[in-house]
Every structure is written in structure tokens, then in C-alpha cells.
Image (cartoon, rainbow, N blue to C red; front, side, top):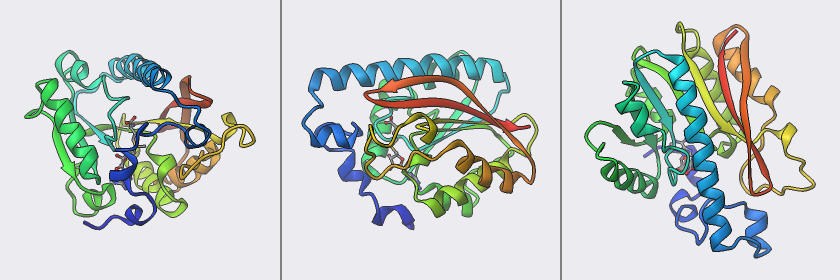
Length: 235
Ligand SMILES: C[S@@+](CC[C@H](N)C(=O)[O-])C[C@H]1O[C@@H](n2cnc3c(N)ncnc32)[C@H](O)[C@@H]1O
């Protein structure tokens, strides 16, 4: 599998750590405890479930939602209800075998294994090989996905997503820790980069050849990191 990121982050090992995806600086100081880790994950899950359900109800455009990266799937609890109650289809792409196993387990639990398309593939490769038919896609969702990409990959991915926004009525949702909300003195990031909103805007607008509107739907604290659910559309 061709995946530029594999050399930088070993996702299979990151996703099987003692506290997978907990803030690295707090983990190194021994400040992440089992109960709080569980509480923080449940709270993040609840936040994204509520906001994404409301967003997709509002989008009201039947079609497929492409999920970029499953990871632990903490923020993807909205999938069953938007399939069953709002009539969307969902496909997930993740380059990690551990993430794909997590996804299959969760989909089986939701009784959606046959209804959700799961690709064990790098997103770049899925795009290059035409495995994502964007004519059917109404929205992309990426949770903590863009911030784990290096600068070149982030740029290339967002330029691609910007071009996607040229299709009428399309939207991109990112759960992202913006640089402007996360004081670098207080939060020491591991391999993630809290890209600023303007860092995201430039490649999106290059890809679209036009202006985008980046709207902060709502914000949520995950430990000491501030996350925004961003809704991005052509202006
Ligand atoms: C930080 S985790 C996602 C976290 C997820 N939102 C959650 O809360 O569990 C990022 C995931 O994206 C996947 N990923 C990162 N870059 C990728 C790429 N270029 N193509 C496909 N998957 C990728 C990783 O394997 C990992 O499972």
C-alpha cells in the first residue's frame, strides 16, 4: 500500500497504546488516568454525535458521506442514525489495519457491516485510483485527520477537497484543533499540527479556484485541547 504517512506515524502502534490518541504531553507526564480518559472520550463522542447529526439534518441532501480515517471511531457514533433516520450512505477509508479492524467491529455491533463501505487504503490512493466516486458524495467528514498530515499532504488533501466543493451544495466537516485556539505554550503537540484556519483556507481556495466559507459550528475541550467542528462550503 502506498501511504506517505506510514513513515511518519505508525498508526497501528499509536492505536494500540495504553491510552490511544490521548494528548501526548499529558501522557508523558503521567497525567492521563483511566477514568478521565474514558470520560473525555465519551464527552467528545457526545459532542460530535449531537453536532454532526444536526448538521446532516440541515444539509438534507441524500447521498454518500465519506469518512476520512476511522481510528478509534470515538467521533463516529452519528453513523447509525444518519443512515437509518436521515437516509445517507456512508463509506470509510483508513490506511491502518488496526483502524479497519476497529471499524469492522463497530459496524458489526451497529449491524451495518454490509451497508457501510470500508476501504483499507490511503485516502490519496483512493482518490488517485478513482475509488471514490465524488458525483455521489455529498459531504466529507474528517475527525483529527487533517492535523495528523504533514504540510505537503495537508496541502494536497485540502486542495482536492476544495475542488470537490465546486460541486453544488457540497460540504466538508472537520473536527480540528485550530492553532488560534490552542496556545502552544500550554499544549505541546506530538506529531499533530494545529493548523491555523488560514493554513486550511489557502489550499482549499486553490483547489476550488474561489473563496470558501469556514464556519465554526461549535467548540469542545478534549483534555486541554480545544477542538472545533468546522463546516466548510464554497462561499
Ligand atoms: C487521529 S486518528 C482519527 C481519530 C478518530 N477521529 C477517532 O476519534 O478515533 C487518524 C486516523 O486516520 C488514519 N489516517 C491518517 N492518514 C491517513 C491517510 N493518508 N489515509 C488513510 N488513513 C489515514 C489513521 O490510520 C488513523 O486511523
